[in-house]
Length: 196
Image 1: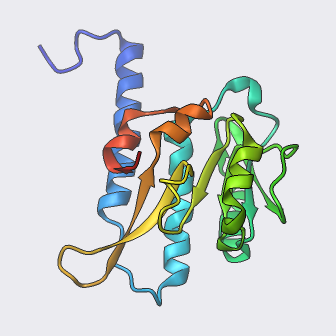
Image 2: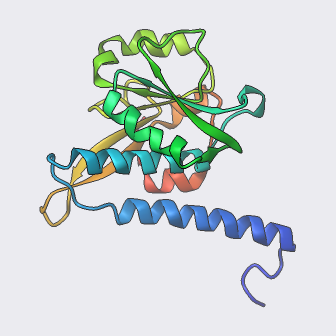
């Protein structure tokens, strides 16, 4: 019997789609170019690609999604501009067009699905996370120790195994994501560094 032959056609299609998504994320991770600290634009572009792919492996409660899938950026104008490429390309997440907004100070009344935390707001991290409460917001940062402090996903640069530079990786804090009511695919955990 062929693999997957025992499954109904729709189940085979769904499984094939999930496997294709997983392969895409794994290839993005494995084939991420070796970078140096001078490659800031390349690093930003890689982060944008990762962030977009995260939306395929994380589910937000349907009743919390509005007309747009909103990515809020706090205190990181360069990354905000890079993320705007998703708008220009008319990318969609969770079936909705992506909209990127800028936040001076994240507040409790703000409505967004992803909050990207720039380095300038990290001194207020505890206040920001407390202000979010249990709202289903994926928090993303890129500074040492953020995943341990409660940020859902944290970008990190790791030394290449050949010692020729660094590779962009990401850490995931499963507890932080679960606390916010986000459902994460096992495939994302498979390619992440897990931090508890």
